[in-house]
Length: 460
Image (tube, rainbow, N blue to C red; front, side, top):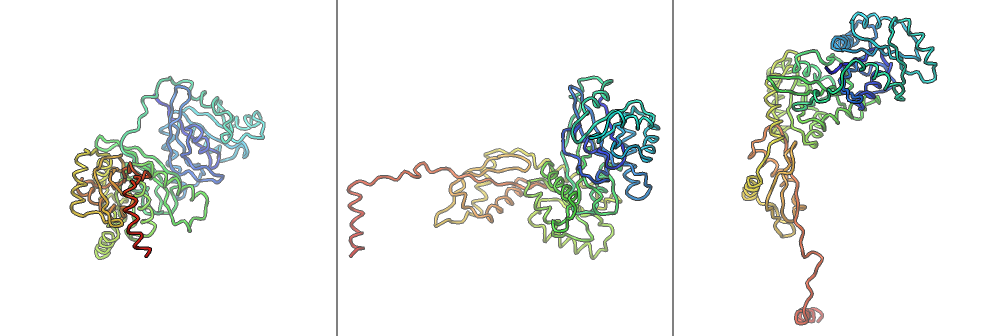
């Protein structure tokens, strides 16, 4: 059995810092501000030959309203899933009433609990331990997560009763799907709908999601991983440093994924920021599905107008399937999975060199490349150079002078003839080297005299 370790505590006690240390990653955003973590964040940790799952949770503030209540629900789910609980407290703040409330909560869970006293720099560890013994727990450890002090003894004591040799049982399967879009377009609601559970916090307030959260789920025997990302606003509107980090992690999630779902708010239509995110996804070469959310709240006339506008402005991404959905009510969400599977399959297809070369000859026959300084650009043969996205390498001469318009023609031609759904095609051009370049042919005496004759006439 692989143990699940949940990190529980008040806001800003260092749970995300410890999560990053245990998983040896930077998956959780860390800053000196409370309330950054709002969803359950899962990661894999390893000590010696023992592997374990770490769950980072939002801070329990004790409020029963709105967003704090939703965050508390996520923490309670993590408590139910956990085998071991690391109850984190802050040595700088000392024992607080909030710690006592959380202590009663974790005690009722009946799980194995270790009190972790963080931020002990400059404080006598013995004195800090003595203060927190009042919580009534016998297993207490002192650490400094930001300075990596006391981490190994802590995790070794927690994993002491678990056997080794569990490395092969943790697997990552299926396509990775990043859900991107502007703030408050319904990304988290869509992920909860696809996963079939309240996996991430969904709230009618921009900026609810801060971290990128991976959500594995299974549908009809197939495994998938959904990645919830923070909403990305225009650069000029970003004021907080935390929002900058969230946007960077969202863009990193696009590059690491196999398929991208761009969520658009049907009420706002296609905005410039939507196009900017779409351009980044296409430049990254990711397979694409477009979800127009909150479709159920529109009048028929507005629906027709939005469909025509999307068709006109998204001609450059016509290969991507468009779905008009309501993530809140589930309308049209199930149909998206077929498009996701198609896009993923197309992005990883294999193509025969002979077949690609025949298609290249057909494309050139239908529309020849333009002349460059009076000479024809010759495209000789093509082969596959990679996947996700499919890369087609074309060899010829003077290919560096092939215009962007003709390259876009080739991309569109290959997408249509290969019947690719939901994925762009990347074209790479290579020119053969001229073996006689830089080696001029010396002229004979007779050739030199013939060359001088017309020069005499010119001088006259």
